[in-house]
Image: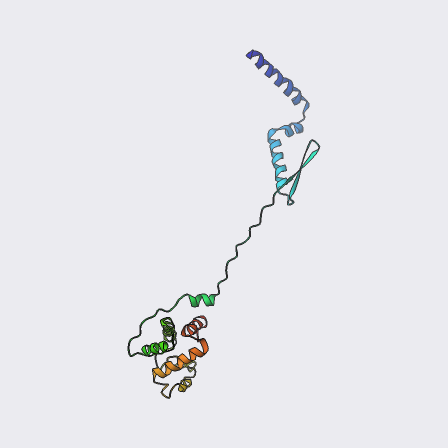
Length: 201
C-alpha cells in the first residue's frame, strides 16, 4: 500500500512537471519562478501603499474590490503658555525682610513705612530698591543724571518740598521718597517691580 502511494505521487509529479517544463519558454518560466512572483507581488503592494488617495482598487478574475486605506493622522502640536520675560524676571525674586539696625536710615524708614500701614514685605522691597539706587547714602550723587540722596531724586532739589535740610537729613529724604513712591507706584513693591523690569523707578 505504501509503495503504491509513493509510486502514484512520483507519477503525478512527472506527469505535471514534464509537460509544463517542455511547453514553457524561459520568460514564462521566470514568471512562474517563486522568487520572481514574490518580487512582483511586493512591488505591486508598495505601489498601492504609496498612493495618495484614500482607496485602492484590487482586481482578480475580472472582479474589482475597493479597499479603504485609513489616512495617517497629522499630529497636533500642544500649545504652550507664553511667558512675559519682564514679569518673569521681576517675580523671580522677592526681597526678604531684615530688621533694621536701630538709629540707621533704614530704621527711620521702617517706622515711616509702618505709619503708612504697609507691612514688612513692603519695607523689604524699599530696602532692596534704595540699596540698588543709593546704598542708603544721604549724599549719594549720580554725576550722569544729577540724581541725589537716598531715593535718588532727580533733581535732588525736589526734596526741598519735604524740608530745607534735604541735602543732609535722611528723614527728610525718606519722607519725600515715600511720597514719590506712593504717588507714582502706590507701594514700594510696585516701585521695586518697575525697577526690576526697566532698570529705574
